[in-house]
Amino acid sequence: MAEPTGCIVAIDGPAGAGKSTVARAVADRAGYTYIDTGAMYRAVALRAMRAGLEVGEDDGAIAELAGELAFEFRAVGDGQHLFVDGEDVERAIRTPEVGKLSSVVSAIPEVRVRLVSAQRRMASTRPVVMEGRDIGTVVFPGALLKVFLTASVEERARRRYEELVAYGEDISFERVLADQRERDRRDRSRAVAPLRKAEDAVEVDTDPLSVAQVVERVLELLRERLEERDEQDA
Image (cartoon, rainbow, N blue to C red; front, side, top):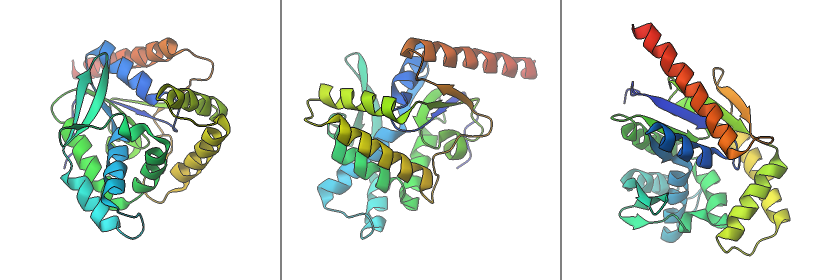
């Protein structure tokens, strides 16, 4: 499938860098559709777990499952939830077990092929803000704006820990930090679409910034890109 030519904002970065929060806010402010690709991989992991499929043994079946799922992002209250085949899976996909498995599942080449196709279809008819690990390098290398969000591993683990506690999880910060380090290692070293910054992406370190400041920075970059595009089209 050819890459869409619409307005696409690609936000990449390691787990816990604030991609989802920033992407959601930028999409809301800009009037774009927010697509959480990480949630899609988590949903595949969740369904694989439920089906008793094992990574390494049932990769073909997991990829086939990924291609059959119907993904839809819907507004729920003040937020956005992922529905899969009509089921709201938002809470189920945020557990540590699903998060850990999703990193492994996302490294299966055929799973990525199927989900990239789904993500490109989502962006084919509307402007979107899409976040993940390889949006600017693989999914949409021609995106209008590419942003690479980063933060120290300790800060990212703290954010994840607070998120899990808010979900009611009984977990220690030390475990979250260890999981974060391992997740980083896997994401950067995997053979298929490893986490890396696109050459033309703008890196934003979120450690010293508030969420509002990061959002404003991305919106400023988007305005600049839109002005540049308008000048070229004039």
